[in-house]
Image (cartoon, rainbow over all chains, first blue to last red; front, top):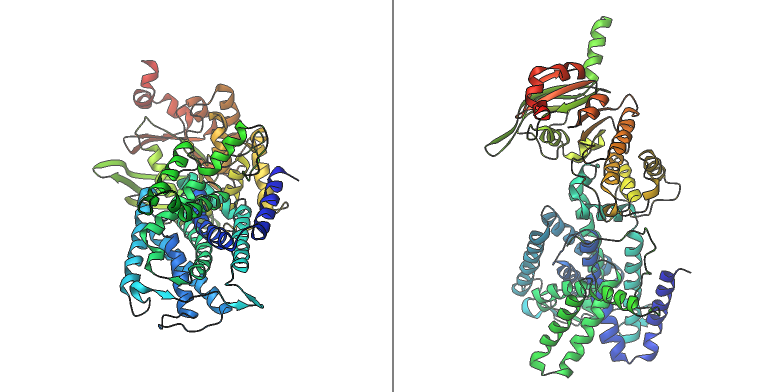
Length: 340
Length: 260
């Protein structure tokens, strides 16, 4: 077994065993929450790390899926709530939100760098204000509450442990898909577009179409996590998709390490822990300062985020650590380069 | 219809490239003015000219990196003037770049694989290519043809300058090229590497024509049948390598510096 496979096996077993030792609070508020945020940030990592495209609209895509769940399924806000069964509203919500992601991509992919960030931020901000002011469909400032996971296959998915395993299954599936897809034809083409879009045109690739397809795929991931997020909060309101939340997604991906799929999950874990416990360390008015300082420290110490930090610690200490999911590169292996 | 007419129609269809009145302006600057140029299928043509003569701009208008401001471009009889770059490539046009434009984060074999895939189907496949995938086999052959077997899994960003030029050539040979534009392929190469380059160019199948921009006359005149001279965005002379070498005007404009 390769060191990399061994690392994944150990990490998988630890994640499966976690609810056996952790309290329901830790299973739900830290475990499930980290997996959801990590999956939303994974969708950004795929766009940015593989495609060189930084989108601040991924939380918005998750939010669109969340709103659709509240509208198509059931809610307790007394507005809409078509009462569709979960096996219908979940795929429809994910599909529509992914199409929205493609439309955002269509707007954004002809620009690059800071301009793409600005366009996606503008779209996300516009949707936030639209959601806050639209009372006819999105119920304005209040949004929807009482949006809970279904009771299916004889399991109450709302309870912490089943919900944790549901989030773990979704996160593991997308994480594995990202690792597999990295070496697929499309994955290689996306990385090549990151390195040199002009040359990709000169090889016969339709570069804008390729980038829009990447937005669609990342949209599927963000939207599915968005369904979990609305269930986790059992409500959705404009606050879920605020500009602050959009930037949190970027912070999570960058702090964790934006070049590989494991990064966003480490970033999300740190974020969830800090968000829950920084308030115990310091005056409640100032806990955001603690969060900011920790993130600043990580990024200053390691441009590659937590993953880069783990790699350095492992190189400094002779014993092998399982924190880093990828083995040291053999000579001649291909390092990935980030262009952002 | 007589045989003679049929023959002349065939000849017209056998032009790989027909440029009529092609011009390109950047604001007030006229980079190309009224270029009319025909290259037969399978013909090997060199374009000479001093820096700023418009040679690379000409390549950019032909491949669609940026379109011409005026004029028409036909590729094997088809008007491609307004085609996006990737559509021209899919029709068999290829090019290399003067300054290597490669994928620094990808390995050599992955880069060549993408070049082969770019002109075939399943460009957007979410599956990994299978072990017996035809495109993979093509990429391995091409890797061997440009003598990069030893650098197969090295990231392109870590290659030497000479090796990067070889990757440039491999990318241009991928798929089934019908006509290739080589933009100073010998730039910065050591003498032995130049010899390898000449060997690769002269060994290309006869049906593949090309235009080569090359400052090194030793290379240019050895790999071309005809030579076109450019100056200040215009074509001012065309002939065989011998005629061009002997031409007094050419020597004054282009070769003058070499004697000074």
